Length: 315
Image (cartoon, rainbow, N blue to C red; front, side, top):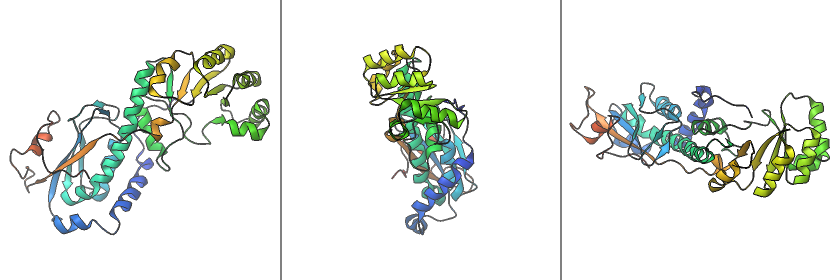
């Protein structure tokens, strides 16, 4: 496992994904907004958290607004990786009102999805309490892997390999087709890929075979707690130990006490519920002031405010 530092995403990793998402939603045009909203109008909007969550994907959401209005101003009130609570202002947006209406669903879809992954990951990391490293898997949404693995990092998790070229993992089907544990490890060593060799073991016998073959990491799959402890004992530090199969949040504390090094959790990306976020929008006058003096939207633009109600665009 390579530790990838948590840092802002390269825009090249999401710019095209945002473009495709906007094109999917827009089709031949936003018939409702084009008919009802004057193209010259400017607005101010606020993204609000409607649940306790960990934020991820702010730059991606900003990209959605800017692709439809290059002059849009996106001002985050938080940074990716921050915990937030229901009612918190997440970001403020200013720009062409019609463009914001058209972009808001795409912006929220990305932000809600990535924040949901970050939130679930943080729950697993908290449950592990430093006793075991939480890994993700390749069970990601097609074409969105880089974004979803970024969200895992935002939640405090660690990325497993990001693709088939990024790490060696000999699975059960490789073992069956390749001639058994010892033979596939031998073949992998002969290939000289200069990567740690990880192999799956579905029994204690396969654990013994993997150790004897000289594997660097042994993926102990779907074994009981007693069998996991025995596997760790037999490996005796000669290889790293990763756990997988049937991993749930309530099992993490017990798994963290087995002595294993890692636990991979597919649910981080394939089953994370979206975070509940909304976008509220109000017109600005030509002078840049709120069109409704003293309105709730004006109050919501202050990061410490979370009261009141204004026009919503969250469906």
